[in-house]
Image 1 (cartoon, rainbow, N blue to C red):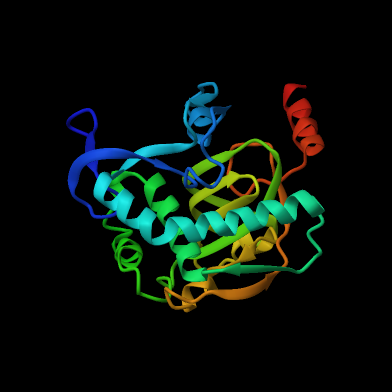
Image 2 (spheres, rainbow, N blue to C red):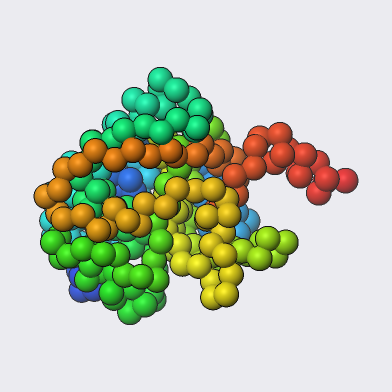
Length: 255
């Protein structure tokens, strides 16, 4: 960024004054002061980061922020509220198949916007096809190299991580994580499987909602989903160890 407050918008690609993009949207219960350690903080040896008005970044211009919020925001908030209602009733009982009345294309496009808003300016060309997809509200079918996953997130800290390769050698699985965002009731992972390897997100049992992109913009449908519950006690993407497993791991390191 050549000037404070200005930068390259992650959607339109123009150099403009940046606005604060809430990730997830502000109305999706992301409007509170929160302190937690992000992946970047940990890698740089820094402590927790303070988000004074909800989690997010200055990464979208005002025009793109308002336009996409108008197109997709209400549908995403409605989906989030339904998820919160189910989680409040059932907790982490992820074996239930539950109904949601949603506009799937709008939900998944807002999820992809979160990933784009988290990416660096250097990746704009790499994400050109995805940027075009979310900026055309009528366009269906997510570009094939991207996969979108969701899970119930009830225990642990928020997660705000992007641009990381994760490989689990013993399972032959791996993914390039474009972004993972977790804030109750849901966590989202937008990833790209590594060539000749199984998707690590699928290996971890996350629910693939890439098919939400097959609906039309105005479609309002009832879908039945069985979403897994996952903890996020560490800042790294695709790490869903329990609190006890994390504490045990840290004890071994300290010895």
